[in-house]
Length: 283
Image 1 (tube, rainbow, N blue to C red):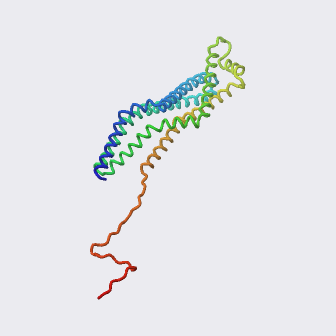
Image 2: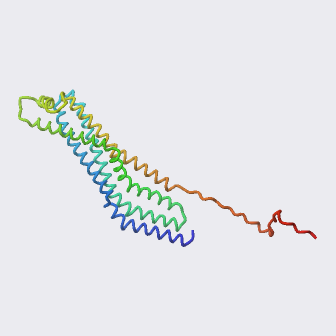
Image 3: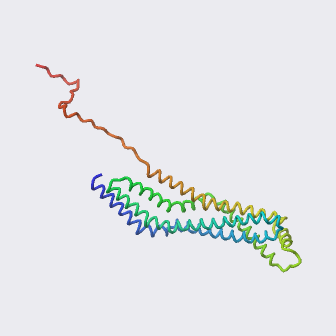
């Protein structure tokens, strides 16, 4: 690499660093893709909060059941609350990655990558280049992973998310009904009797209170599993896929054909004459 090529590459990386720091760091977070991603994450947070509130309302009704029936159901609801906390924490971290991670990538990581590439050009050492490649993969994963998983979730898992919304609506309706029954003024009957009579008559297709609670909790467990897959498992898998893909792209080497030119040895002053030429007569 001659001096002009080195200078051109150095100026190119300086331009990329300045453009990333001054323009991309401020423009990319305001793009429609990032805004849609944030709206999706905020919607999921609201879903988790609504789900948690509805499950607490159902737990009030479970507490009115006899101990033999209430204990296993109450344990299941308690486990669901733990998963709600985990989901909320996951969504909070993903929002931080979208908001802060994107800004950090364009403000610090990309300029640092350009600096390392410049050092690799000046020193002709592959160490700086390898570190720069790894940092660039990290920065691109921070930028791409969450929006890509959000788009994939909307495109592929829409039916499962509708199931979650239906479960929340049903659980919320049941919790509201339980709260209304428990605050009623009929003091001659127990809470269990009130709930049994209300759910036998008010809810269509439900003839037994215990069956109702079991069905609701079963749907809640399925919905929590769907939320964990769509908000945690899929982003991790997509992050690993992008990391593998970028790593493969940065390690691809296109072999170039090697052309060997054999020059005559300096001792051989006269090349060998082809046989087709007439030979000189020896006098």
